[in-house]
Length: 257
Image (cartoon, rainbow, N blue to C red; front, side, top):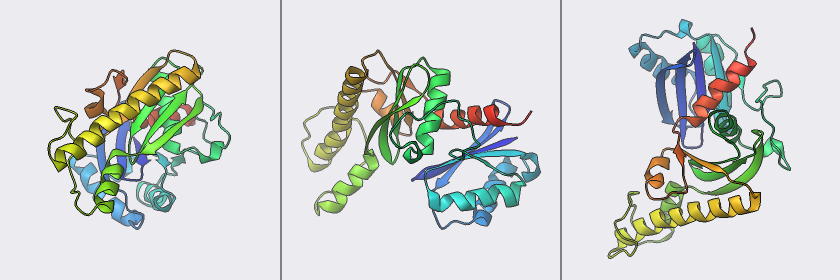
């Protein structure tokens, strides 16, 4: 079995695969101080509920944008599952795509993995919008190579900043308001965040397409992708597990026969 780990700034997602079949999916809050043993206590308990034992894991792959968590996630694989994880970004790991940007080493592992999966499952050229801690727009050319993109503040990050910076503004839920013009403080904030991000999505997608000069398919991923996709035609496909499917593909390309 393969253990795929996607370590993001907000959450770490663990997925278990037998071939192409996903057997389990679990997530925990990202904590740079969490040790390998702490991950193991939590994860092996959840695996046991599915009838999976640590000895059943014979391979692992890791994509991390949190250097402080990477070491302990690698220790988790080595100490508790007796396997050396394949790490996206290591020179020996072949992605099947190039990062055609000025500084390839600076591109987040999750963005590269998303590009690999999007090119494999959809028709490039593509724009991949990932609604995470940051909202990223990534461009994939017709040959499946990563060509750059846009990084904007994430929705939750924007709401938290608004609450922290303005003494009278409360924390609010992210919902689709029935109208743009709010009639109270909460309604005004919810409209600004939701419809403001719709404007961000539609505006950036249009500008990227115009600058790229080709028709481009748009895929949304991340926890809030489905909510925003309901309110705009700019997002054509929703794929909540795009990163995990990319990790599975990369492992299949690199595993020893």
